[in-house]
Image 1 (cartoon, one colour):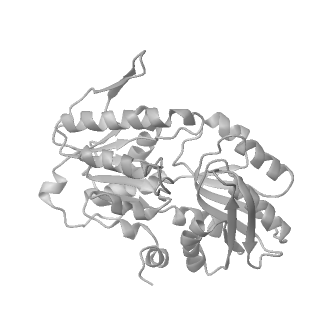
Image 2: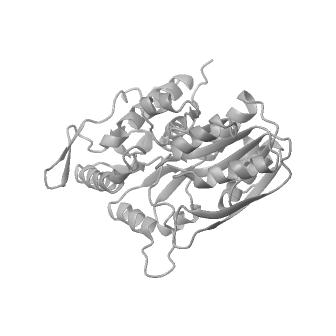
Length: 362
């Protein structure tokens, strides 16, 4: 049943058309967001975005010397533009910096095309783990966020920032969306999960507590020590909590080589866990991660890896790795764009108990 749209709308705000403009690695994501926006509008009987039928056409070329040149093929003058890019291609991670450069040049092209407002949609924010420095190192995520600010963006839409405090680095709005409700819905409604949530390290514990509070189920904690001068090698990982005979879900915001998750899987089994699931917002599955997960499933150590489509994995990869369950996280981006366009509230996209937990109201 359609819900009538009755929000008070500003004439100036609603008079501006929006345009979804994809970089090359964001085309699939942009098309999905447009489909979701149409679905949202139909569900709310709102015709204000009926003109949004396809992404803005853009021709981006690579030159033989490694340079990039984006050229927008249609007018965006006076429009509210949302530039969509997946800066990380999990199957071609070496192109990350190239993808970022394409994003920066495309943003400048949009600004010089007299767009009224420029927004970025980056489902996964590259360099988000490089938010600090121990000396003689860059604070890389600040360098990237400052570059966006210098290009005059209004908003950045992303999901599950590894360090939410980086929002304080800049003066523009960062809409940090949460995959919590998507993952909770899957495990509580589809899997009928009644077990224990596990945070594999202290950083994960900051958001896994929301899973526990919303579901009323207990949680366990992990702690780990990394090898000196290593970003991925782990010396040891231990779990604290009563999980013997219980199903468990190990939850993390992102996983590159997946060594933390796989060590947590082994630790959970050593403590007598029954069925073990992994839930990750951004599943990169780099290096030998896919083979390691496949072996873990084959040995009966774990059941499934559940992730969102913030990182687009090719169909051939998903067919080969049937243990991966991909949930749709892009509808949340479409809903956030709709809410900001119509003057709504992004926090209302989450169910009340989870909203209260996420936004500090309890």
